Amino acid sequence: MASVIVVGGGLAGLAATVALAGRGHAVTLLEARPRLGGRASSFTDPGTGEMVDACQHVSMGCCTAFHDLCETLGVRGLLEPQKRLWFRTPDGRESVFAADPWPAPFHLGRALLGAHYLTPTEKLRIAYGMARLVLESPEADPPLGAWLRKHHQTQRTIDRFWSVVLVSALNETVANAGLKYARKVFVDGFLRSRDGHTVHVPSVPLGRLYGDELRDWMLRHGVVTRLGCGAREVRPGSVTLRDGEVLSADHAILAVPFERVLELLPPALREDPFFARIGDLQPSPITSVHLWLDREILNHPHAVLVDSLGHWVFTRGEVSPGRFYLQVVISASRELKALGRDEIQHRVVEELKRLYPKMRDAALLKARVVTEIAATYSVVPGVDAWRPTQGTPFPGLILAGDYTATGWPATMEGAVRGGRLAAAEVRPHPTSTKSSSPTTRTL
Image 1 (tube, one colour):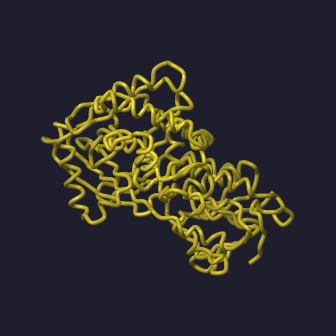
Image 2 (tube, one colour; image 1 turned 180 degrees about the vertical axis):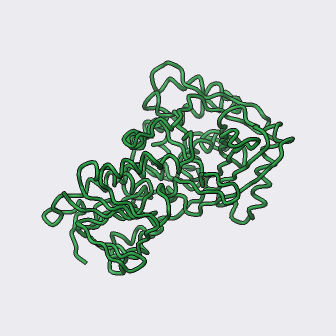
Image 3 (cartoon, helix red, strand yellow; image 1 turned 45 degrees about the horizontal axis):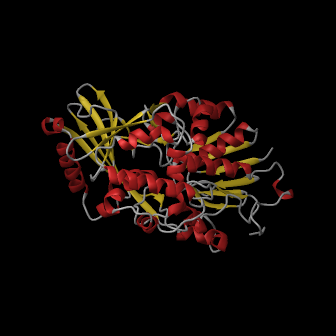
């Protein structure tokens, strides 16, 4: 069996670690933060001591690799499937989106027909657009906005349907996104299977999802986990820590966010064409507004917001006596960059007052605005040209992450698949095998 150092304890690093340790490899997992989970994790609020997710993360029924990882770790029961989705418009009206007991893709037909915020003609346009998506090549990746207009979508259908689904799923606007991963969201999530669209929401903070069960699994499988242990440089088969300590192994798996990859590589690798293209990936931000109120304002565990600043609102109910917590998520939030946190908070609170009458009488006990500047990479047209394979031209150095070539956009599912594909590159005797990359080079 091989020895492996995994640099980064986000979902990609965790997935690689679990896959490798489960096969008997000796794994050391390094994470610079004092907790695991990476971007899909929680922080402790200094004022209340509560564990708060930086941003609410959800999965869908089509996210099979992520759900399998949760099953392996024994935390699948902490994901609550949402068989119904509530879509709310600024006038306070709601439509319920739920599947009928019919085979895919007909199981969601009545849900679309029942959307109060779309006219009958708009629903026909959308149905036509969905049919055209199915017929489109899975590899085609022209600008999404132009493709939608070419197939008879209006600004209203784009704003009230396509954007409502895709901005949250891809963390990118219709104007900036490419067709390929928009198609994947609809085909895998809504058209291919009956349960692909089902949203699964963690019933606990993400920090708890990657808590006791994960630590117990790591201990049982001999994984050496070092938290608060940042890397300064990663080379094939070795990692130099920030304090100067050098660790060696048969393989080093670099499982950090895309924007940190190049800075951790030595100059000779950083300038190599294989790695250099990672620098062409561009970030897309997510803003989340956390609110603690003196009462519950939602009638359901969540709502998808149509024609609103916020895209989703989630509630966890009463988190402590007299304190009710909810979070509003704004994806692809570049337009908020010029606003201060106070103004973002003000706009979200005023919007909730228009959407939910109970909010008008609620006392705001505490608020916090969190923006992840590089929450994901932007799925612009042709983005796959910049996404590297997990195997590199340098034996002993492997990449893991949602930004690598996984066939998925930047999601938890993409991260887990990236980690598993990285683990598949590990061989018991690395010096006798070739990388999956077409050319093997040495440093």
